Each structure stands twice: as C-alpha cells, then as structure tokens.
Image (cartoon, rainbow, N blue to C red; front, side, top):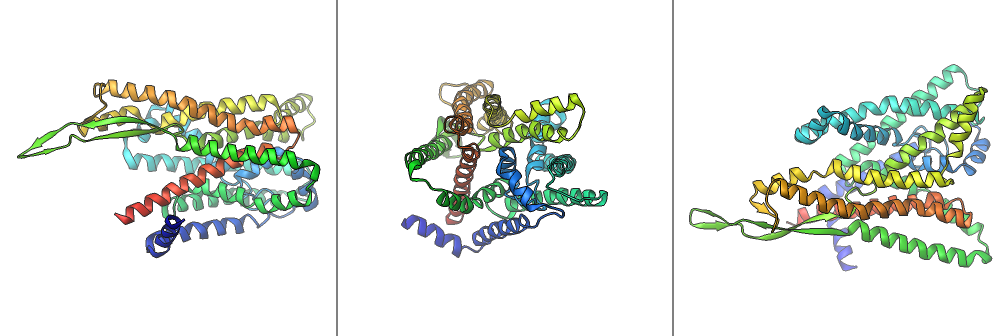
Length: 423
C-alpha cells in the first residue's frame, strides 16, 4: 500500500508525468462527451428495443466505446481504424515492399506504414458507415430521412471515426498507454454502472448460487489472464569479454524474456473485427426482396455469436492472429543480429542463423500456450451462455479480457515512466 501511495505521489509531483496522465483523462472525457451526441432522425424507443435483443450490436458497441447505444456521432468507434491496421499487417506478408518499409526502414518506415493505415481508415469508415446506417434505417430506427439527411449522417459518422482515430493517436503520443486500447477500455467501463444497477433491480434470491458460481469463475478467469499475460520464458544471454587498452569490458550474463502472450489483446480485437462483417452484411441484405439475397442474408444472420460455428471460427481466428501478430511484431532474425553485434550469445548456440532458429523455436512453443489460452478465454463465455442461457455472458468475457489486458499494460507503462524519472 505504501508503495502504491509513493507512486501516486510521484505521478502527481512530476510535472511531465502529471501532464501525461491528465492528458489521457481529458481525452477520455472528450471521447465520452462525443459518445453522448446523437445523429439526427433517431426513433429512441425503437433503438432501445432493437439493441436489447441484438448481441451482435452489443459486441459492435464495444468498439464504438458505447457510442452505438445512442447512435452518437462516433458510433463507428475505432472499428475502421482497427480493420485498416489488420489489412495493412496482412499486406506485409503479401507485399514485399510493405514488409521492407515496416521492418527495414526503422522509425521512418513505421511512420509511413502507419500513415497508410490512416488513409485506409477513411474508405473503410465509408463502407461500414453506409452499411450500418442502412441497417438501422431498415429496422425503422432512423425514420423520415431524405437523401440529404442520409449523406449528412454518413459524413458525420465517417468524420467521427477519423476524429476518434486522431484522439487515440494523440493519447499514444502525448499520454500513457495505447490510445485505441484505452478508448475501448473506457467504453467498456462506462457500461458498468448501468449493468450493475440492472443486476440489482432484477436480483432474484433463487439465482444466488448461479451468481456465486459466476463470481468465482470471473475471479479465476482474471487470475488466469494476469498469469498468462505476465508469464515469460527467460533465455540466458552471455556477453563476451572484450579488452580495450588496459581494461576488460563485458563478460556479464543476463536473460532475454520471451512473453508467453507477446500479442496481448490484439488477437481478440482482430478476430472480432473480422467476425463482425458477416452479420453486418447479412442484416444489410435482409432489406432486399430477391430470393437469393434473402437466403444469403438468412445464412449470414444465423452466423452469430450464439452459434457453435461462430465459437469455432472465433477460437481459430484468435489462435491464428496470435501467431500472426507475434510474427509481425517480433523478428528473431533481427534480435539475433543485434545480439551478435553487441558481442552477446546464447550459451550452447552458435551466433547468427542458429540463434535465430533457436529463438524462433522457443517462441513458437510458448506462443502455442498463449494462443490456446486466448482462444479458450474468448469462447468460454459463449460455452457458458449455451449452458446457462444468460445472453450477456457472450459480451462479458471479451470485455474482461480487454479490460484486464489494458490495465496490465497501462500499469507497466506507468511503472516504466516512474523508473525512468527515478534514475
């Protein structure tokens, strides 16, 4: 407790750190205010009825930071930006030029790569915004709209998505932590008061054992997430002794920490972004009278988070994206080269290609554990939903995973800032 109070005191007394924390808080307040500004033409009663029975839009509401629940100007949230990032990461595998930009051109290349992702966000926001607004109008949630109203609403939601992307990047640059993750985190946390109050008002004594079981399961899930997120495989590294003049340098030993879950919460976000499209397309096609389109619409709409197929694909996507994101962000060959340049080596392993192969082998093994765990945690709420029939669980599991991962990452970033200023 004393250590925590000392850290809080240091955060407040250090001018730079205080400005970073206050900037994050201010940005999140602006984000929450934007999520309360609705677009024109909404039938509120119809919107509440539609959202209360639609789990797909409940998941989509996570990405909008709660902005979809009242059709705010940022109703698309960070979804287009995340989708654009996914596409750019995939293109690094298929397009050698992009791979060179991302891996070989250093910080300048990464900035260029990020800029491409920003530009891609705009057309994706146009597509997602048009589809979503068409779905809402088809459900009689947006009523009495003229062609000018439709264009205005589309312009507003696209601008809102770009604005939210900008806020997220400002948080990453001038605040602490990942801005996009913090926006999603703030949207999830903002729903807690209403969900707790709803639970209190609908409380039934006969459900006490069930709630206790869920509470225990929740604690175990959180503990498991923390354990796997913090787990690492240390690889011993030894520095060769070097003689310069009359002095000897190096010769020390340390270790290289490889995390079991290198990708963090990103695979979950990637997988959800991909799985949102079939249901959105199916709902959009339901407005047409063509028999073939109606049949396709029924198949796509049936593909929801309550289905076994959804759970299987969800697990597979999380599993694959864990490996994919780890491969993109962690380069064993570059690490091996840096070790060799600094006169370091892994005992019993030759420097160069052998070191790179050894690190890749170890990383592949530990990532398997992280990928299986993330996939299991992602689909566990869906399994429990089928067993208990409580629909809200399908959303809760993903939310817990994101919240815990973001909080752990934020704590590490704050500790790093504090340590840097102490030394």
